[in-house]
Image (cartoon, rainbow over all chains, first blue to last red; front, side, top):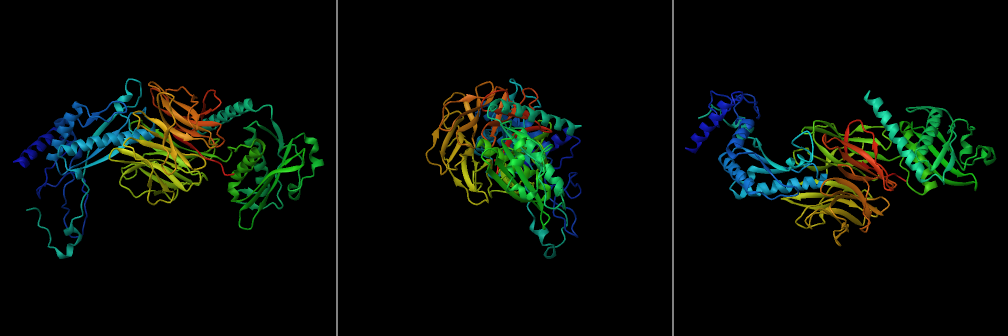
Length: 197
Length: 435
């Protein structure tokens, strides 16, 4: 039931972004994903692999369902405000519903921190967000954290009025690392695949 | 066009530096005569004929010493020629008419292996004693570095302070937009010549730090997606990861003997300071507070480390022994203070201070106290000392555009002077000099 709802929801998002041809998981044999394939090509096998998920479409879905993919902080702070906690609770629910996609929790500090402290502060904020998501039920292996320090500001200009906007943590969705499939590594002992059942 | 602009700016910067140095030490100026270096036998090398290299070396020594104005160099034009044998035993009566307080001699000799020997001497004309000498066997194309080192040795003999001429500056060159910047590590001589890029901008890099001998650069890179410390030779080759770790590591800095690297590592929201052998290996943890401890910098004797910590609630400057014991707070001058760097002579610590509206560069005593703010830009940070502990180079970020540039300010005060770079620049690291 949940899977069907998920497929319907995904199909709805795909129809909104018509340029992106989103495929539900797993695809049928007759509808190959339109996205570039990463895989382990072996001679004699048709190119059937797990589909590359449409990350931009999923990120749009996350932003719509959770309200935002970003939570913000005050200067020097890594405390989650009640508003941030509400956003993260919704993000956690979305991530639990999408176990096949990983999330990189990217912490940033404002440009008016010194460089080393900005990296440390970004990591501390990202860790606070990750811990909140884990406490909300997201499997830890689905999450990884990274700090960009002050190296990726949000806007091209810095003024006294705008620099604090860079204090933020962004949930960025990632394709999970593709596991080599045993039946692809040993083609001689296995029959030719007959497509999906 | 860009090159012309760059050269012009370099000249402006050098000239500005010369004027200020002049104001400091006008009374004790010494005239040094630099006749052109002879060669026993004029042979062709990769860097040109040895006779021509001799002329170029003497010209380079004059132009190096001219930037100091503690020394007034004359020559090589208009001075008498001499033989290589006279270089080690000058005929003082023959030089008495030139009105110089000291005399530079030397020679350039081609070697069988294609390299050249460069030998240089400095003699006191009054006492007729040798003040210093230097000898190098270098690749013929490297004659300029031999000249820089000779000039540095002469400057040290006269002023008892290290010369800057052979020092180099590593920094981060930034192009592209601010939201999608391209950052490359660049290396240049202290006067802006011999500019080169060590990384090509595929990944974001920060905080390059030159090893004390200038042979290696340690830096932080986003290669692989996670900030981690990498190390490479100063020509960009032999690039490798310093640590085998899944945690992010950053803020590297060499110990004065070049054998250890202090850095910070962040594990689950807690950043602490570690030290590791410069060849890698297992890091030793020095701090254990739950806050952020970062930006470590060794004292010149290698026994202490100054760093910043927010254990008191705001960023403040602390010092500890290099094994992690004896941690104590140094900064009590107000605001939040960060990015400390110990001066090469051991007397001072440069830092940047956030006072609630601007970030500026200051210095304080190595034992704490006597804070003195040197700049008043909108955002001045990332201080780095000159080898003679007379200047602090830093990054100035312009309000509005956010464009970074390198500036240097004398610890005696005065306005900061721009350091010319081809692009926007950040995070300077000024090397020491090899004595």
